[in-house]
Amino acid sequence: MSSLPAVATVVGSGTMGPGIAATLARAGAQVRVYDISADALERAKQTYNFASGVLDQVGGPKVEGGSAVFTTDISEALTGSLFVIEAVPETLELKNSVLAQIEGLVGDDVIIGTNTSGIPISAMAPALTHPERFIGMHWSNPPHLIPMIEVIPGPDTAPAVTDQLLDIVKAFGYHPVIEKEIAGFVENRVLYAILRECVALLKAGIVTPEDLDTCVKWGIGYKLSVIGPTRLLDMAGLDIYAAVSGYLNKELDAATETPQVIKDKIAAGELGFKSDKGMYVYGPGDVDAKRKDITAGLVAALKTLSSITPV
Ligand SMILES: NC(=O)c1ccc[n+]([C@@H]2O[C@H](COP(=O)([O-])OP(=O)(O)OC[C@H]3O[C@@H](n4cnc5c(N)ncnc54)[C@H](O)[C@@H]3O)[C@@H](O)[C@H]2O)c1
Image 1 (cartoon, rainbow, N blue to C red):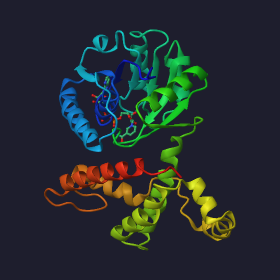
Image 2: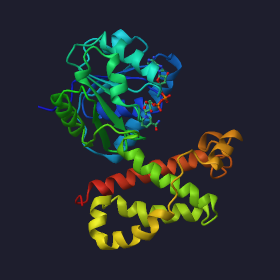
Image 3: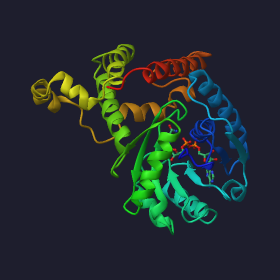
């Protein structure tokens, strides 16, 4: 029997919720998608359909019987649900009030996962009467295409709940990673270490944005998508790593604040794709074209990487 709960609820349907719902529905779950905003739900239906279409392109396993319904009625969304994922905006106060609301409408043993990007699970657990069923479940964006989920038990999470969540993640074909609670969780810690160095290199004028992207995509990203960093250490040789890190680590950027160059761009309204200007400048239609290219690239890479032997 599949470990995937037959009925699941996604609470909060903005950037992340619809793709999460599409992933679960494709695996056969009856998904209820709840949002406080009717407008957000209307947008979510389109994003859900788009994500479902992308999953068709990927062509992975599909279990018949999956579905999604969209509702602004929290009681309708949660009554009888067997598994809940909270994906509301990243503020502790809001999350805690939503978690308490959720708990009032589901059975005591229903697992409640939070998609928080980094709020400690231990900071949210006190909002619940039964924190033993509460756990971090951090999806990566876009959630229907990145098949890795960080599973973060809090201090009160029952070990059996962690095991159940690992089984649930595997049931829809994703790779779960179990972590101890730490600020930012593992994926973002690694990503932000890379981004800090990248911004510092750009600021110092060492490399152009175009060449930096080429260097990281082909020199690092391509390799790391096949070989994880721990295995890479072995492949490179620990003696080589020691020799290089011995002189290089002290040269790397170690800033503890957000770089001023980024703050200045934000102050100028340059936010990236959403304002047609950020690190790059986008002309009419460029952002849509880039989004299409990114989706097509991720679909192609996912198909290829799914077909090779894990290293
Ligand atoms: N966006 C990302 O790349 C990303 C990646 C991983 C994790 N996350 C995390 O996932 C969570 C959701 O992020 P997002 O980017 O989808 O946010 P978002 O702002 O795009 O969407 C959040 C949705 O929650 C709804 N909402 C607000 N209050 C609500 C309430 N009381 N009840 C129900 N719905 C409510 C909003 O109407 C909105 O549609 C956050 O914790 C975020 O840190 C985001």
